[in-house]
Length: 597
Image 1 (cartoon, rainbow, N blue to C red):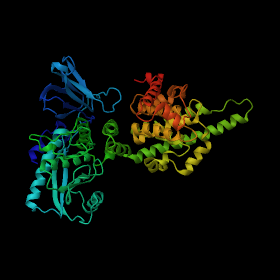
Image 2 (tube, one colour; image 1 turned 180 degrees about the vertical axis):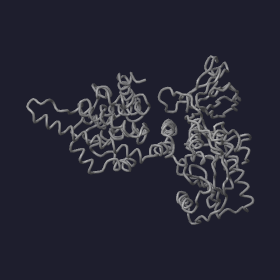
Image 3 (cartoon, rainbow, N blue to C red; image 1 turned 135 degrees about the horizontal axis):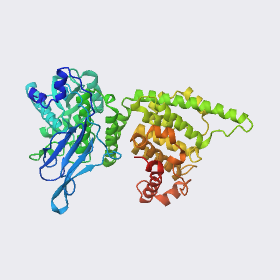
Image 4 (spheres, helix red, strand yellow; image 1 turned 45 degrees about the vertical axis):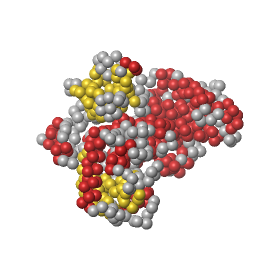
């Protein structure tokens, strides 16, 4: 890649940095626009306070527009008049309107709650020279049969073409910092073990990522490993290179697919996206075919690119909380659209676990405060019981409200970035008296670090029996589900709640729609808190069980497996879906959510 390309487009803030001027940074955002028509388009877009300029979009192309205070497009809404302010960190597509042939812009829903707003105008963050360049170390193994002169030229050209595609979709470029060989184990036929071997034997320096091209494998068709990396910003990528049936354009796709994963892209249901799960299939053999990312993945790439350029992050733990949260929202929105593919769910969990140590520490602090309050309240209740006419002890719903409000106050005294998540995690652990969370793989890994066994026993001894709507099980379902939203995402929390009730239908307790109401209410509560529609101040001041948990009158319970199946079928059955939708309507009708902005 030429030095001229690297220098292209340096922001004024870079020049200011060179002469010693320090600017107060403002968080930049991105808007992705895709052309879903069959013809090239030119749209008028105004970025920040700059005059409108034409943005060219080929048929099927999507482009990111980076901004600090807003992106406005002219004449793109239905009716074609005026300017439309697009929302930050969102994706849009332009499509044809009916038979008239006009076009309009539409937002692609990607998990955002409510309307996203731009921040107040601020000076753009400083970007250092070459901040948008990723240095890569390229290696081929000893099974490569071509002479070095040939394979090096081929791979350098492929890297350069991949760099151009990334540049167009997120503004990042690649630079070969070193190129070398390594001796792979010819006896190894398992791809994951080969990746582990590559990680052990090769250091990525002087690059930030090592890309290995292995010729000891033949590229096969279907859903097999053609390449792999362990997740966003992982230090190693391994790709199968040898095959007589794969052309160079398809090798470029494979490289870009893995680079997409490196930059946070996930699998896409769109058949023409480079992030479709199965690469190959002759898609790039059509004359004039281009390698393109789909709009949601272009948005993911661009969010990651902003962090790399402006904050020089090296791992997902360095991502800002806002970016991690937005990327998780996008993963969770994509996950249901692609069947049984695990990529989006796994990437959502990676983001949830990023920077986990401070979050675990903050959760621990809140649990310690709950423990302290529990012991003080038990002592106070004992004193009241010992006094003739000494007053009514705090118990049941009031006891839960006390714990929730005190935990919310404690959460205001920890790291601001972690406050809401740590509060929800702590309340889930506190209400989980049966240790259900520790039976989940991710829960088992983190829960013991939030509260030791000795601390847990001490807390449970004083905790009493807090309830919600008079029932301890509803309080547990509510806050364990809210906990799972933070730990694993809302879709997993929904699925876990339903799976638990289906399992109970085969036992003594049976399937309970009251429990399902508590599960769903806890998920809605978590979304409101994490989505800034509900604040910790609100919770500390006005949390009550009646405000956030709907009445359970008329909800059927203790349904055995056959009774449940006869009445509601199972997952995906319209009868069950309608019943669950009706429960969610009860929850969303609560005044606490109606009043939320």
